[in-house]
Length: 225
Image 1 (cartoon, helix red, strand yellow):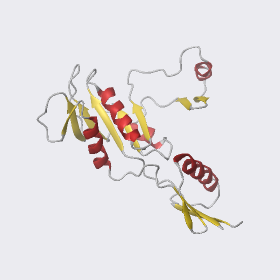
Image 2 (cartoon, rainbow, N blue to C red):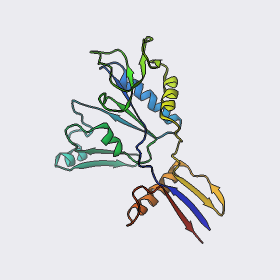
Image 3 (tube, rainbow, N blue to C red):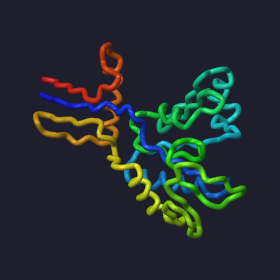
Image 4 (cartoon, rainbow, N blue to C red):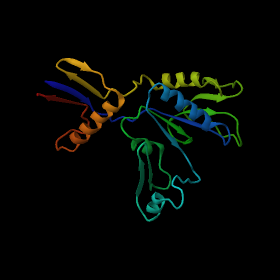
């Protein structure tokens, strides 16, 4: 007999930390180091960058760019090790809406910009045309100690900042607590690929059935051979 429990994703979105600051303050470097350190802890990180002046991922003339320019609502370029998607949105899509659209197995979101959002923020000091302090600042980063009511971290102290971010976000288990597989009473350990394959396949099947509550959290499947 083989029995397993699939824990469906929570309806709550993952924690979000946004790195904000003036132009040339080093926001991208801070966000990049955070993502590298968090990924080293086997957390699945999504990055979101606000580009208020527009941006382009598809290079002009590529097949995917031509398909998008032809009017596709979503254009996806897929290769063996990565996928790039470009989608048409409203005038200025909110950070909350972007996070809602992310895959369900994301552990933490590191955003850059979105200073008017409700997300917790890390403010990077310096740069050109300093910005007013946004709401929900939880930490400050800079080359010199700052007189502030929130913790200050040196620009090179990425490990300290990472530890603080994890404290702010609460317990996060790498690999997401999604799948438990038990064979004849013995728990079988699953790596990230196996866990993702199990949860994605079974979740997609379960959610396609009628009568499944939207807030369902646990599905138990028993197989007998």
